[in-house]
Image 1 (cartoon, one colour):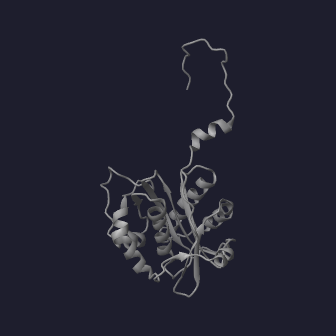
Image 2 (image 1 turned 90 degrees about the horizontal axis):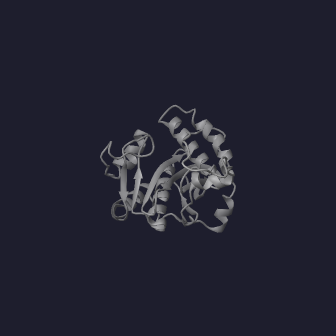
Image 3 (image 1 turned 30 degrees about the vertical axis):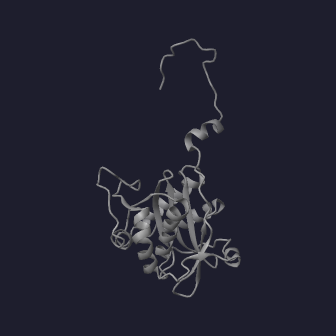
Amino acid sequence: MKTPIPEKVSQATLTFKVEEIEPLLSKYPMDLPKFEPRAIKIGSGETLVIRELKKEEVPAYLKYLMKVMEVDHDFYDIVGVRVYAELLGWYRNRLKDPYQFVGLIDGQLVGLGNGRLVNEDLAISLHSMAYKRGGKIGAIMYYVKTMYVFDVVGVDELHSTFESYNGWKRYGLGFAQPQYPWPDYQHELGGATISYITKDYWNRVVKKYLSDYIGLPQDGIRKATKEEIAKNQTMILPEKATV
């Protein structure tokens, strides 16, 4: 677009370096607290370790998600596409303040839980995925990321939506999550209905309900040991999309 200028100028052409444009496109990040790796023994007897995804792991992870996109049941195809965009958006600095957690068993990728922060008071739940059947890994990933935003970051509210019937039944209906009126309020994932959890509702109801569903031991999802962290430093991707 061009508009006549209202004053004489000494330079009719201005040149910008892309480094000067980038702050306008990506903005500055929030100072999010680090997530300390957690561990829990699942029903198979194996130890699931949950840690932050590392940016250098994203390119290989994206190749695996291309296989998930080809799965045409239970909405894995659209979830695969959206998670691909979320991870690539983070990798390319085009996703605001994300939190990306992976679940690993002996280094093998078995789960993902991610979302992002809108501000200090509001978090958005994006996706919880299990790449290994059994063990309630999806529920554990959902628990961990919800625990992180409420108990570590300290937000007041978490917004979720559900693409699959199973996800809605387990987390939307299962937790009796209230919803904001639609279409007045829309979740950023496709403009769907917003289900929400407040900090008070998390502390009074959802935390215990979800921990009972998972079957957490008395020490909950404990802090991972140094040995467990070291054993899961390198992420091994599944050869096939076992979802």
